[in-house]
Amino acid sequence: MNTPWWKQAVVYQIYPRSFMDSNGDGIGDLKGITSRLDYLKKLGVDVIWLSPVYQSPNDDNGYDISDYQAIMAEFGTMEDFDELLAKAHEKGLKIVMDLVVNHTSDEHRWFVESRKGDGNRYRDYYIWRDGKEGGGLPNNWGACFGGPAWEFDEERGQYYLHLFSKKQPDLNWDNPAVREDVFDMMTWWCEKGIDGFRMDVISMISKTEDMPDGEIRGLYGDYSPYCVHGPRVHEYLREMNQKVLSKYDLMTVGETAGVTTKEACVYAGNDTGELNMVFQFEHVDVHGPYGKWNEKRMLLTRLKKILSRWQTELSGKAWNSLYWDNHDQPRAVSRFGDDRGPFRVRSAKMLATCLHMMQGTPYIYQGEELGMTNYPFKGPRDFHDIESIHAYEEWCESGRVSHEEFWPCITAVSRDNARTPMQWDDTDQAGFTTGTPWMPVNPNYREINARAELADPDSVFYHYQKLIALRKQYPIIVEGTYRLLMADSEELFVYERILGEEKLLVACNFTDHDTVFHVPREFISGTCLITNYEDGFRDGKLRAYEAMVLRNM
Ligand code: TEU
Ligand code: CA
Image (cartoon, rainbow, N blue to C red; front, side, top):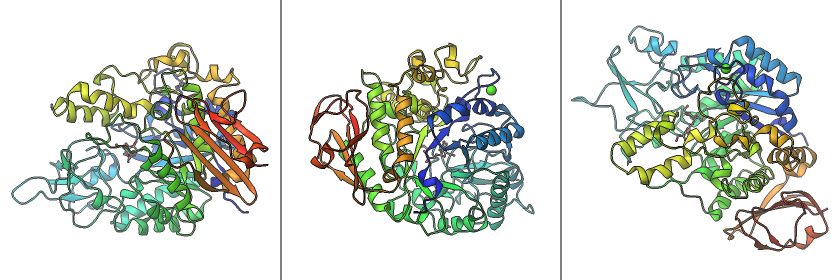
């Protein structure tokens, strides 16, 4: 079978600011990443996804780009980037860039020109509107990071749309000149030899022509019916594919919050000529009375239902991405496992097993392979992320919810949990920097760090290494179909993979206690590919957070 490389690959996501600092200024950088390539090689991953490294005023840590063809000074230079790319390629690692083109920074040259208004080439590069008659914002939409989605610009005398922060104005994709400029920029990176793009909120690039008020959710109107999966999004992606993507051997993954499996089959269909795969968010989305700020865990039956639906409904039609963690999510072992109890290591391995045996391309977020945990925030001053800072203001400081009530909710899912520095060793600042880190290191670094795990054959790190190796060894992990067993269990996640006569059984216990489980007969005389209990599996029960993969031959 002629399987494309990105279907067999395992991706490692790097958040450069927090990965490795090479010069003691407390900020991770490109040279730092280059110095750790051998670590990634040892883990066995194939591809690095770099969160944005472009020039940016850092209102949203690089997701607000002021020059797509320059490197953020704090991260190094274009020479440092070229060196990273060359060294990675030498070692057989590919590099996928973050492409953030739903919006730019308000400090991008295009926006600086656009706000000048009439008679200007960039006049219609962004989404400008007059206020409502009699004054007021063009509509009631709220921005993702708090406040209204419209900002009045004095210079131009109009409002511009920003679905995220006011320093992230949305580009006007309906303008063909915008598309050409974006495609040219992408081509420039492809000519440099990069291996693909992860496309930030790509499902939001097309907006409806009229922009009516949205249904009030919380403080503001909801823009999603008018901005997510808008009328021309597929047209634009096909154009992008024809003009850029199809000319190179790339991996492309679209970040598509709110996408259904049906829509995913268009974005990432085998022959729809758009992207290779998408990130969906259903399995990490647990809304409560304060929107995404919620400490509740998802019921296991629901989690299984969602992930299984993605497995079966994309099967043969489109390709899945598999992830628990990224730079916007809390740490997986804290969200789904036992981060403070005795089963941190075991539950981290169980989660990895459960995900990596599914069909799709797995993504590992930096530190996940060590079982890194959420950060013990003490108060709102500990937040660095624009989203958490504004959410605390909007919900708590406004008096809508008490601190006591809101605190567990915001700390459970704050994006800052994922952004504390990578824990390399047990020296000061976890070996991340010789200076003062831009964000404090999680105090558990003396126990949880890469050096300790590399010295321990039973570590989470080696479990990930083994899972990655198994994927390379057994085509069934890439190609096999998926079938959920025990759908009603709130304790066990059990599924099969099937390829002709060959079968895998993946059995995972999501609880901290023994749970009855009988191994189906056909697997009893087979082989055990991996387990997180050193003494192998026992028929009749799964122990706390136990995970095992059995093969019927
Ligand atoms: O995220 C967009 C997105 O849909 C969310 O994951 C979002 O960050 C969060 O859930 C809001 O509640 C992308 C990037 O991954 C994120 O880091 C950026 O801040 C955002 O786009 C804007 O570029
Ligand atoms: Ca640095």
